[in-house]
Image (tube, rainbow over the protein chains, first blue to last red):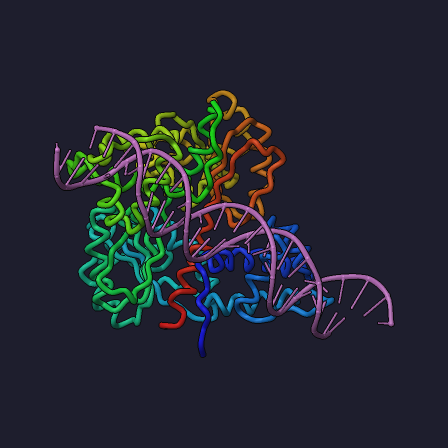
Length: 210
Length: 210
DNA sequence: TAGATTGTTAATCGATTAACAATC
DNA sequence: TAGATTGTTAATCGATTAACAATC
């Protein structure tokens, strides 16, 4: 199948559609037009139709979109029908918080392991998962066919661990360390969550009002 | 002062410049050209110069940019010389993790209070701050001139609490609840961190490889 | 001075919006 | 059938990149 290249702008909007459609579904809304959805989401109807038509025609003239059908279709596009075996590397506050976040499980991201170097943390159990020594990570990844790693480490440690993860055959890294990881293998996908960047954007916008 | 409207694309890149310049500063790099910075950051030199010139001429022909000067200038643009009195609403795992995150303090975001409705959490101390009942939030905000609220609540509770925060005179909300807040007051700035959206983007990009 | 590199204008590229024929 | 709304092409808008004169 020849897949037309989808721009990242479009891809980044997909989870938002998915979220709104999920809410509609919870409220038993059966169908919705791009116009009505555009009102709720605060975007143009034109953009919604353009975005969706990158992936196929999900609607029907004169009717609109079936909410459940579109919700499932976008879920599939986002790869949410897959199960992702996940580990969390760095079991500090943030790592533990993410381990406890049940919303990830619901979408198929199952936390199988937690790793840290801190002897005080090793052996502690978070949500039924024992924190293990980082030394054991390589074997664990191979034995449990881990796909995904969540990196919640200090930035000094992140690059080395990231490259280790690559060599152990991980497919993707969800990175919370405040650094842009440069990986040796371009096939490994990195998604960065720069929390401080987001906070600074907020700071920029309110700075005149303080 | 008539301020030319700065696009959000530019604003969102500022923290990244700030981050890279901070790293250079740590490594005692005194000056840098847009070309060299573009290599490190993986963006075009042209974009760097365009972005910076939205705020003034920080460089010098034939020399480049003084790292420390530019770092401080961007910090100022981002409003990081301000102190922001901050509360965290929702003292679950994520709320507590953020309360413990010292990087925020370093940038002037000082956590003054923690609030929750869960009686099991109320009274517990996190990093020297006692978790208080949500009922006390209104008075606390006024008495401690709180500027900013971090929202780490379930999505069902977020809209009401957000509107309460607005009525108590908060200036900005850093929202971690998976919902787009619609506020009654347009002067209150909301910055959303949709963690699940970010994870789904990652999922999209690795889905073919699983 | 000569070389380097900025600030800034102009050109290009891509993303968003508008419009409308097709069709349910 | 008539009205509604899609899918899609065309027009517009804005952001990025290229180019280069100015100047350190």
